Image (cartoon, rainbow, N blue to C red; front, side, top):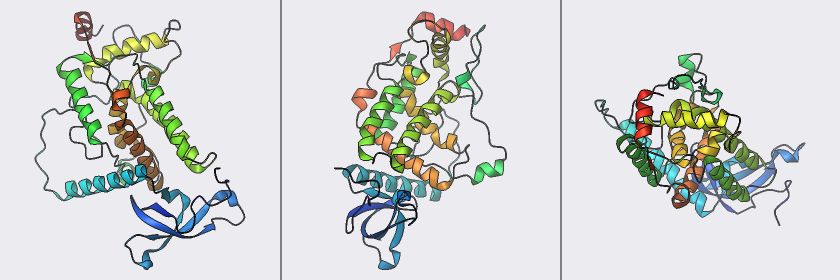
Length: 332
């Protein structure tokens, strides 16, 4: 039976993982207390001792910083540590001369953002003649002041190596072989997010802050995907396909009426959103604590996807055909 919402989620002497700044460390719960005696629903504080650390580092941590000592969470802790080490090595290495050679999306990822190999305009791609721009491809507002933008916390998102490899293959198939991902996808982004939610929700206490955060992140990813796809996630060769799909959605009749881009496109394009997420989050007003939590949630999501590649990322790309090639070149 699941514990009641008024009881501690972690018991005394329980071994846990606890965030200290941006990393997860093994720890043991020494004690617990209600955060606000006047409001038991506000959650608990836990006194933790970090494994291998002196007692002077014992800390009262809010429940949001603690995680169950599961294999999945231990893997997350390991990945966060590897990501941090890679960031430090990159920061201390000698700066190399910037190459203008075009590279695939995600080919230089160390857990942070990467640009596409092909030249991508930050502006909305020009629609074919005679069509209007869709509302969902409007961009995200630019920061009002550059200095505010620089001060905002960065997101270092962990991307498993298996997914990085898929990003490179995706680039080659589209830009070199002139193939297209199947749209509508047999396993669209909506299906992936719904199934991830069903799986991860089992690890969250119903009605808890953790459960609410999961719902918010899922909804946020959908929103970002729908707004970002046509603006920053497409290679030039895919734009004609996008406008055809957009036309079907907006036509008011047919099987795709009323659907969103999340219902039509698959995880090949969702991966591109994940590697673009650091840049997108930098244009928001999220504080460092919220950014850290978002990074954790998205890292869990990418790990879950990496373990299910055959289901979500194994669909064969299609040859575009001569008619598409001609239409794409003519912008019609």
